[in-house]
Image (cartoon, rainbow, N blue to C red; front, side):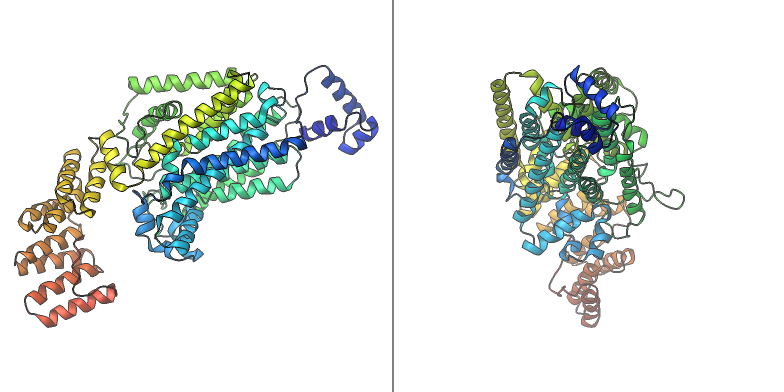
Length: 616
């Protein structure tokens, strides 16, 4: 008998003759009799229906979870755009239209993320409020999805006789509040572009929950819903690639383990979804944003979808070794979320050093504990396996940055399942359990609220980064850019200098240091930094143009023309360089040549006017 038949048999026991029940559920009468005899000798493990009286309680708890998420993030709704939000939102022409073709070309495997950004732009332009409201709404929805997944999990055949099942709704609420309130989620929620992580997690968790509903005999429509949610997740973020494996593991853990005839046919069709991301990546258009494109390193004439940067930037061995310790750091952040940081200065492991070995031993110990707890604490064991599975994609695909907190968004759902069940085991008294959940939620929510304040301004966020990663160049560079935009040039110059100390080959830092001096009319001091930029990158057209502007300001017109020509040779459609060349010709009273340069500038970028003189 499969789980659905067992559930129906238990529900109908004593309500009709044995022969009638056997006929209605499609089993032999002898098998049904044997099942009843076997069940009479042991605690019932089959799925119990949700009493009607409890449905209002469940709805109230789900609404409480959503309300908690909105309350905790209510101070993030007016925050600034941050980091990759600048190129993806502020400077991205592809979100200015709801044209599906253009969005597909720009976003590819994150098409739904691009569509949501375009919808935000259509509704409110570049006003941050709408973008942040959407992020918070997705987080609230994901938290509610975690609530229902945990609730359903505790009603599966494998969990029906567990102590946690007796207060499944309370355990589910504890898990969902942990997920909603945990400070490690603040990066994915505050960082507009990282709605990719929360949208993918929402689809992932919803798909699992729909699968659980379908396996409990709630109707075949839930299978379709699980498949649709999973398919949608594949176009939110590539991490959804592991969803079919999570469903297979879920089937084994909570339905088929120990069965004489496992129902693998229910889960196997989901493996088809694993083809979606690879196929989509192979069809990525050339204009697809670099944030979504894998490395173009040739692999049989194609690309390597397992790396986002080339081997000279990050070797596969170094990345994988480092991820062993990064996973330990992620576990620490879930247990003790202190010193959260947008841009960690994380040490790279190049061998199995003591740090890596300690991390390996920790992971092995957790895996061993999950194995030995399999029969007694099935949900905890599943949570461990799911956690590492959810981390696997970003731990295996080689990237420039080895650690980001938003990569923990989906794995935190697995941690939430463990939290809800574990807390129930720890506090058997209902009042103590409720008190523990309340205290933990308030504490985590307060830390998240405080962390949101750091994200409210670009200056506040990058000042926080340089305090925590004082030797990392990127933090100083981005803080310098903030100071420059705020016209605090002395601080900008100092911060660009610190960025160069951290990375002497930081080309953009040299360029912007030169720009800062140029803004202060200190052109002689600016020129050496432009020269350094082009010595590091001889094809840096903007550096040639800006150096030409500096020489023009010093009256060296011929030198300025030479540099603008070099910029145009490197970048033939460089409208700004033509504009600045026109300015030089005009200063030399060569009006015909000036007008010719201005005309070419307008042709390439119609919005330009001759009075403009961009410097970056």
